[in-house]
Length: 362
Image (cartoon, rainbow, N blue to C red; front, side, top):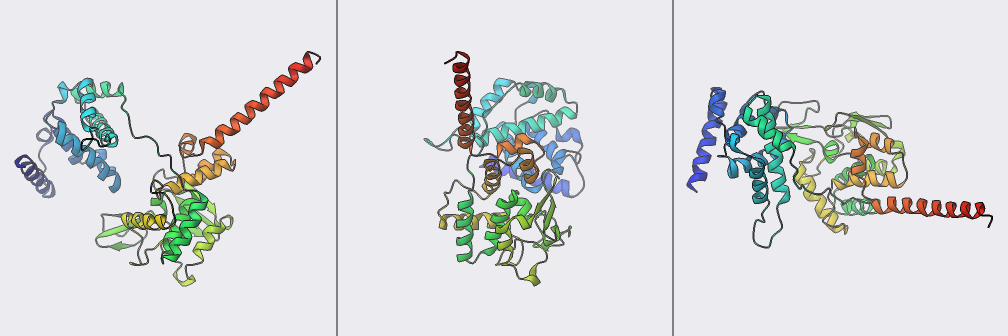
């Protein structure tokens, strides 16, 4: 406990010093240890850390915190590949006896080690260059790709129960995610810790809302939006999406301005945690398994499109992906694909056998 209290006082002092504008010289921030490199990565105004979105920064902070806590005193010049493997094994140990291994935790920490070491390499720190070379030759077991997806039947059940619970906004949100194949963030937006009005002009509780769908994205029947992750512009003709149009009909004409998906309780766009909480409540009422998340509506959209034999490049563009491999990674219906391959192979064998028989004069 004394160590934790001392660490808290140390970080508090750094925060106060930084906020006052009197930053310590770089050499005082870095002394060759993992902990000092973590601090420099987070405090250096030229660090790519400051370009991260709030949610990404929170993810980074968690992994960086693990490095600080568990291996912070390690001297980078003495760290070798076996050391890193040992760290990984230690970090993935179960939280309690008999519990599951914490692979996501360990993998995330090692990914953050790669990040800060590569950052140190850009500063021409010799010890970071050597460790970066070692890390580039190492692989670690990460979290397996999600296999769940929402089906159209589940989306219909969700919509029905959302309305019965007085949440038409949730019915619209999930329908948009599924019909447009969009990320949740691109549909409901996100609240950023910045009270400066952005493009949306929506500010509340010292935060501003950004990146979600608004009625200004719709011209006639065409919805056009630049996606938040890749910056790729996607276009959808809503006239071809009867379910989306049906859900939008629940919005009175006089209220068709601003965000499309609005929390009935606040009159403002949803905060992510509230949206996810309501999704689970409605999903359970609709009989949708807990392993299906709201984000799986996007995977369901891609899978449905590919199962319908839409052209992969068209699906890629509809989903706002920049690479076909990413689109294929969202495909959750492997059985249907392998079944088609099997049928083609069997048909090919029959053709070969028939041709062989004809050649033999049978």
